[in-house]
Length: 427
Image (cartoon, rainbow, N blue to C red; front, side, top):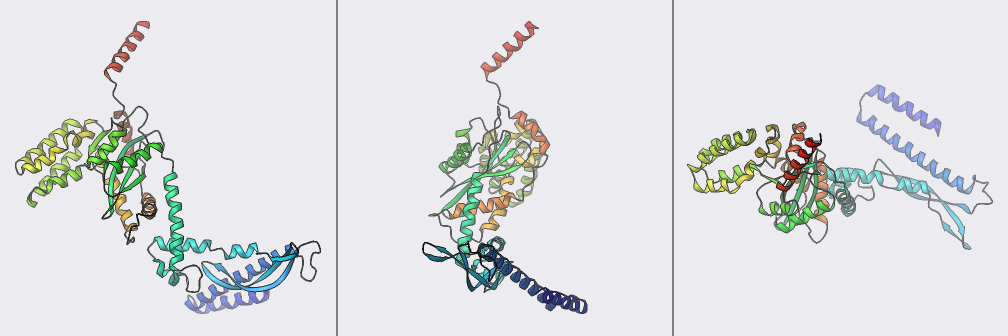
């Protein structure tokens, strides 16, 4: 066997030198590799039989195992089927004999690598119907139904892992909630958190027929149960798109949350009342508001927007003023304007939504009677999170942490002053 293999290697090397890069020579080399693997696996199976039964023609008298001929079978190499003749073995038991499966054959027969390749192909867009074309029509276990069952099992693992992740940490600063319409009667409310180190995390989701308060509260309740909470002694900054249900859900659990209205959504709402000729100037004015440093600059920029809008459309002005103080919540904290880019809009959470939609657009029908939507969402959110980077100017989040410290109540201020005075007298 060794002599034949060496001769084959020499022949392949000579062909490669003579022809250079050749698809025919490359295919011969791949076939040689497959044949070598097949011979190696058969040799390993024979070795297992010899260990349990003893050497051929000199069986171990004390063992209960004995050889039982051979049978056709196959092994998997690089996701492809390789036919082999596998040895068989039996064992004496209970006055009779039973066939003993070879461990080595079972391992070589296990489609672990094939399943990984099938899942990778499925995730990048290869449909269940095309798996046979990719892996070979003679490869077992690549039917459409097998791919579906495999993806279901993998989805269940992804969902369990997504919901089992530890999200309790002492430095949460920002919470964003937003809804994604999956179907006509299926909505997912998704939460994203930002910690003091600038890392972003997709925390969890809740499914419902619409973006209701009950749906949002279900999500907040699960987040709270899993350990999500504001930093100790502090408040959360919640950046929302203006949906009343989301705001109510957040404030029902953390009443002192600072709510910032998304300026992008508000500009979009105001724009629909104005002529297209006014859109450019409106965008410039909102841009000035987004870059304003501190409350005074923010109030001046907002007054200019109100003057511009009020001169053109009363309904637009009413829409602008509907948000109230929430348009300037971040400015009121007097944090560096470098944080405005990240926290004056919900772009941080809408960006991964775009990535997630590309993963979910292959779903033709959402089956709400099963966990299918949850499995696909866990997959889409997990994949989206792989693209995350820290928020811009993460070093300035320390200032946001300071500004989010809960203000002392009147009684607490009095006690603190008394304590300081007593300390001074003692000194």
